[in-house]
Image (tube, rainbow, N blue to C red; front, side, top):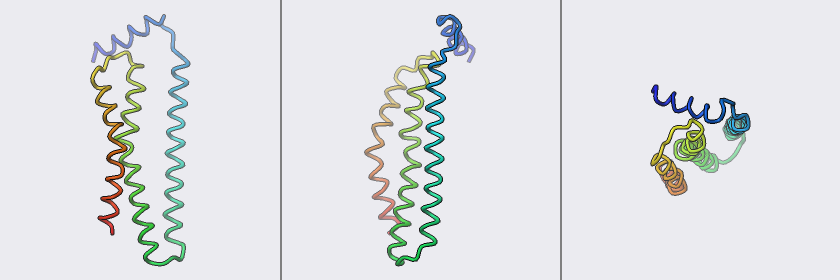
Length: 130
């Protein structure tokens, strides 16, 4: 742990000890956009679930909409560990000054698996709930 702190502090000294404000601003903007997207997603999910429960529609159509809504929720929950977290680490780990070598390849592999796994999740969810 101490060696990691030395690496970060030594990279600060290489930069003259100054804080890279452009990098911090870019990180702050990315984090605020992520929280805004999360907030919008939660509001939309609430309104969709409220709309499904209050509207008068046929039982079969309501069941199908609930299945699709649950599949959408599962898709969103699978995108976080397979897409968002690896891309966040790929973007933020180099800023620490710590080399992470082959971990970058593994994180890239996780991101590339997401388009393969996503339709399989939908097919399994729809067939299981049908």
